Amino acid sequence: MAGNSPGAAGNRIELWGRVVAEPELRTTPAGTSILRIIVDAGGDLAMAAVMTGPQANSIRPSLRAGSQVRVRGSLKAMRRKMKSGLVDIGYEVMADAIEILKGF
Picture 1 (spheres, rainbow, N blue to C red):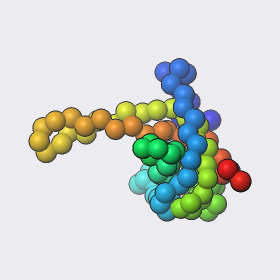
Picture 2 (picture 1 turned 30 degrees about the horizontal axis):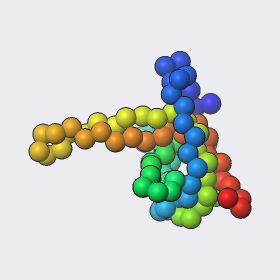
Picture 3 (picture 1 turned 90 degrees about the vertical axis):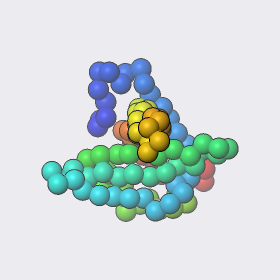
Picture 4 (picture 1 turned 180 degrees about the vertical axis):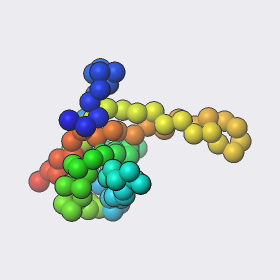
């Protein structure tokens, strides 16, 4: 599966929730498809999930805001330097699989 690497073996996450906005599908200049969704997992937890490759194209037509999903993948830290000079760290799921749930 895409996203599986030897270094990610112990870094696994499963996220359940509702897609909160229309999914974004874009293509890199090299032709790789990238799908990005935001999943509200309840409480104060909302997290981005990113899927790349042919799977991203396959699932996109079935996803929409409000879809109930289960996302499996690995957690990736994203570091950004803010204008103030401080470093902000955010997280996103690098998705191996996105499953649309019925009756969740």
